Length: 387
Image (tube, rainbow, N blue to C red; front, side):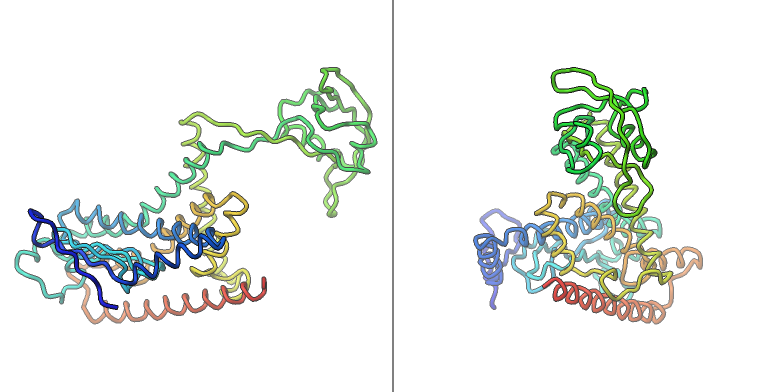
């Protein structure tokens, strides 16, 4: 497909150039077709993945600009290009394949041919610490994005908090036999007042098969105390079971509390990500199979399910954290590989031999392709299994 070049308006920078490819019309038509045929969740899932890639590459871009490096290209998605626009020294664009992105900085390799003016602004001309900050900025932005996503999710939707009010009674359980009804509010256990649902749940769980004195208030406010013999929770666990489910309400925390929850939530996601990597490395979970690596297709599939069940923002935050952590692995072409070789150069006080860098890049690329193929195989296996 031949791109259409749009002439910049009068007075614009003569270096500015816009190209709108027919691929853009195809992508727009496909998006509209998916949305109008009820597949809007697929569109949202792809856009969410694209947002995380954009945030990652934006981190590299902003840090490189801050240190005066020459950024040649900033693309979201892989070619063919849907649209591209040259503004100043940087070409910006959107690719038709939403599986990644790239931020090309002049001088990422020392054998790159540059003009004398560009050499002073090249990546390899900057101190090691500046180069590492530029590389680390991508994964760092993914962590920031996860915190922001969780903060917005908490502030917009609130926190789902169970109350002491009974929402439902399970038939044939001690609660039903005792006379508890939906709308009653649990008040005490063996004379100790309940402050919240968690305390009531712990009390019930700690008395399997035992008779307890349970206090509750009716919707009219009448306090009743009854003796009830608790059952054992189904499933073989030795936990007490009453047979009630609590009414859940949405609570909106203060901005400071919401921020603290978002940060602690992101920290837990980081821990889960490292745990997942360790389970793969230690062999506790195989790379192939239902519990193995997940690729873009699998991520989009899970995202669609998450959208239907209203927990997509949490999944997006988890994917963002994973994207940042995986990129910090000390393997080229991951960000961590560049940081490793920069640190090695700083220790040795001279650049790493070009052949060593090329061999490391080649091996890393093979590993990356292998991981991609394994993830694609797992995605297809999950798809046909579910189908």
